[in-house]
Length: 297
Ligand code: GUN
Image (cartoon, rainbow, N blue to C red; front, top):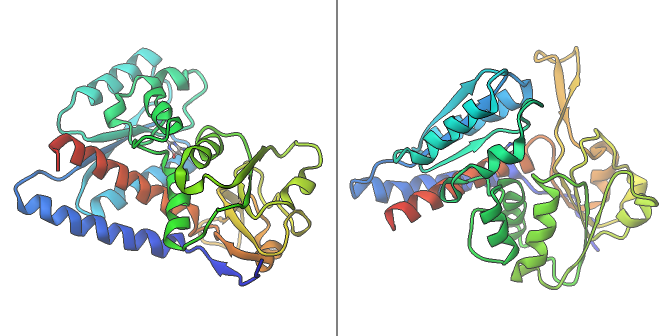
C-alpha cells in the first residue's frame, strides 16, 4: 500500500454536506413546508456530553433546521424520562430526536432507547432500526459509522478485498460498524476482524489491517508498532487531556498516538476534525430523511 499521509478531513467534508442539506431544504421551504426539527435529550451535566449536544444543536440551526436541547436533571427517574420520550414520540412537530449517552447509572439505557419511536430514531439505536440495518435495508444508520462510511465514499476509499480490523466493542460505533460493513453490498468483499484492547496478540491482529477502526476509550493506545505501513486509520476516540497551556485547560486526543502513527498511514482521521464532525452531519442527514419520509418528499 502507498503511504501518502492524506487526511480524511471530516471538518471540511461535513461543511460540504451541511451546504448540500441547506440547499436541499430551501426547495422544501419554498414549497411551504416547515423546517425539520431535531431534539436532543440531555440528562445531567456530563461535560463532554454538554459540548457534543451544543454542537448538534448549533449545526442543526446553521442549516435551517429548528432544534433544541431538552436538559433534564441528573436525578430524573426512569419513569419520568420515559414520559419525556413518549411526549417526543407523539409530538408532530418533532421529526427526530436522540437521547444523549451515557445516561446516569440509575437509568436503564436500553429501556430508554427502546422506547424511542423507530421513525424518529435518528441515532439508529432502536431494535427495529438495528434489525433493518442487519438486513441491509434502508434505515437510519448510527451517525458514527454512517459518517465513516460517508468518508469512504466521498474519498473513494475502497474496502474491496481488504482486511478491516475493528478494535472496540461499543454499541455506538463498533458493533454497528461490523454489522454495517458485513451487510452492505458496497463492502461485501472485505474480511472483518473484531477485537478489543484486551485481545491477546492485539498488535499482531492490528498489523494485518488494511483499514483499522479504533474505538476503545483509551487515549493514544494505538502506537506505531501496531499498524502496517499504508493503513487507512479511523480514530473514533476523543479524550480531553488536562493541559495548563491551553485556555480551555485541556487538549483533545484520540485512541491513536497520532504523533507516531499518522506518518505510516495512507489515510487517517485527525482528532479533532475527523470522525466527530461527520457524526454530527450524519445525524442531520438522518433528520432530513425522517422529515422527507414524514412529508413524502
Ligand atoms: N454519546 C456519544 N456518541 C453518541 C451518539 O452518537 N449518540 C448518542 N445518543 N449519544 C452519544
